[in-house]
Length: 213
Image 1 (cartoon, rainbow, N blue to C red):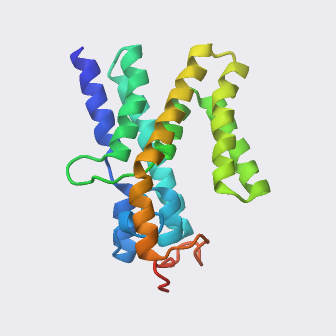
Image 2 (cartoon, one colour):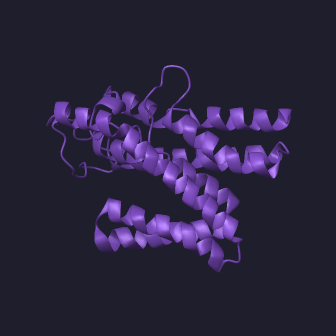
Image 3 (tube, one colour):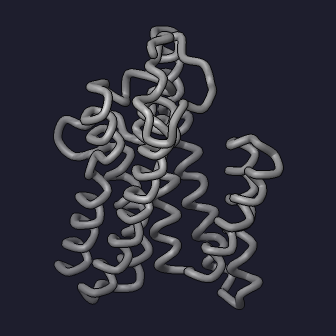
């Protein structure tokens, strides 16, 4: 029991590392939670700080989930604690420790954890989503594709139905976070005048919210 609780706490703390905030603050001096989409996630960093920095944050956030899985497993936590640690790392990402009240949606952290738990189906799901993005040129539709893929592909790889149900629960957690963040994000949209669009330069300074260069 003590090991399980410790593992969940560690997973939460790993998730709490504010990668998007730290990268954007260091590159632009801005608070990522108050510009662009109002979310402390890789997609918002992509728009605010630059494509390359968004990719970097995405990799770091995926790593948080991946590390949380392996730390929990290496500690010898129970299977129940192992599965719950995915929610713990996402909770840390979405509601970081101490003063970091506004986090992201937990998409990258979830993908990272699933890469540890279900590596084959998750890697294939990410590849399918990447192809969907190249074809559709729509992030939201691509997210739908990856969610459906992550739910169905474990069955194709012989995983028990419970794994697909588990992934559905993770997807619902992300959807709930979107609903929770909606009021905040609408407020940021209204203040910043942000409009969708890629920023110039792979590691450019980004397009500041409100029309700045």
